[in-house]
Amino acid sequence: MGMSVSIRKFGGAVATALVLTVALTGCSSDDPAAQGLPQGAPATVQADDVPITAPYDGLRPTRVRVPKIEADSSLLAVAVDSAGQIAVPTASKPMQAAWFRLSPVPGAVGPAIILGHVDGDAQEGIFAKLGQLVKGDEIIVDRSDGQVLKFVVSSETQIPKEQFPTDAVYGKTDKPELRLITCGGVFDHAAHSYKDNVVVYADLKS
Image (cartoon, rainbow, N blue to C red; front, side):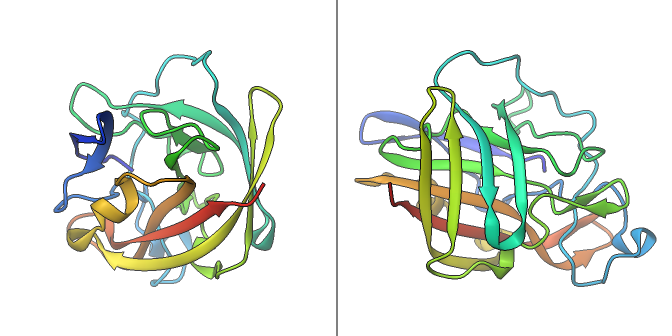
């Protein structure tokens, strides 16, 4: 899931936004046909060489659960590597999700970003069924301070990567919000990546 990013200021706070022409990539380590996955299934590109950030001891989310799609993962804290890409978990561990720690901590004002593979190592990933979520579905996030936060899905979209909704995903908000992101759409064999992104938007419930 390597991502090229640019740094922008939103209301005086530094936030990280995706370059519009390169959204979430690195969505499969292998051709899905070779993995026995349907051609329209989201997938993930090889990310084994993308570094993961060092252990992060500040306030952070530690777990994400999405009951409707039976997704449940601990959360790594990842940032941007020296190449300007968002570091993500290795595709050999597709059930591992990550929190982008340059985004707000879930529960703080702003859009907290959680990333997940849709497949890897010949198996489904943590967000393989992300596109099934609809308005009203629940997402639960545990934090390192013991808080358990409930978010409710407000909308879901699948969009071509070149049309990635940067402002909607990363832009300033006046309340705590959550974004779950993965890949989807048609598999591009030449680019070894799926052409779309799936983005779920959610608001804090409690």
